Length: 357
Ligand code: SF4
Image (tube, helix red, strand yellow):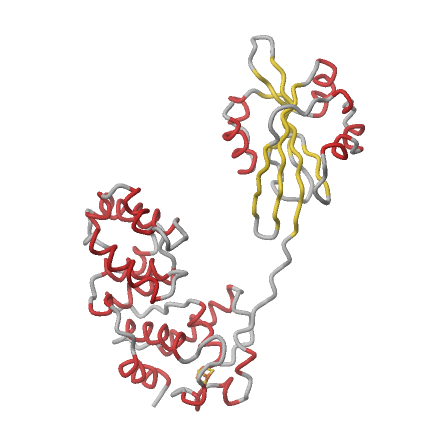
């Protein structure tokens, strides 16, 4: 018997009995797949029942107030899933007349549906032979085929996808994908896989070479760099009493290149107000910090990028004529309306909104 047959046989004897497995209604499969993202089956079960009881079809879900959807989701976390689900239901009602897509290509265009979920729905409900690859499934594959490449690289994902395409059965792709899901959580587990009783052990390259512990391999993540940004909202009333402030364009080989931000002093570590005012930055910008009143609330914001964590403090400073003229030499003076037209980082946009000016 080959891998596919062995796996399907194992599945028919060991599959978990789950309510959505008694149905091939794509609505039920979709809801269950979204609930099960980042959630254990045992925890997700009660939510699934509550959800389909409250919203038996896509029309009921689309028509529900967003608060009701979020309330039913309460406790599951990752609330963007609930918001996306609700928006997706509205998208299906408005763009597809309430008819759920019947193929992978259309599902992938539905809000909140990624390649794994689209493949799961398309294979289970519409027999499309598309591999549903998540961390569990990739772990099995790297062990079975002794794939050395790191699983967090897209080239490896592509390789695993191609390998699965060779073993996914055309007539039972949904069973195959579900078998892989169950096999990954019941047998080929992350820690202490049950190799001794595994039906695939004789074809498993990792087991045969006694290297199961090596797979899946992951490329170590780049360390996250912490940065401390001190932004100054230097403002002054213009002739018509309209408020103007200074911005600058980011240059150099760094994040947000060519975008506009407020004048910035960056430090290597957190800094108190006294040290901040004594920083050579003020001299370099020809601003007399001794007379500067850092008035108003300092607003603190955290901003996460892929490999950077930015701790930003925003200070509002009303500037006098002398400082204004000095700043004007190296910065651009704008009003809020002009600022809106400039490209700027989300962090700066968030600050301006929060300031409520
Ligand atoms: Fe996974 Fe072990 Fe089975 Fe290989 S033998 S597929 S590592 S459980």
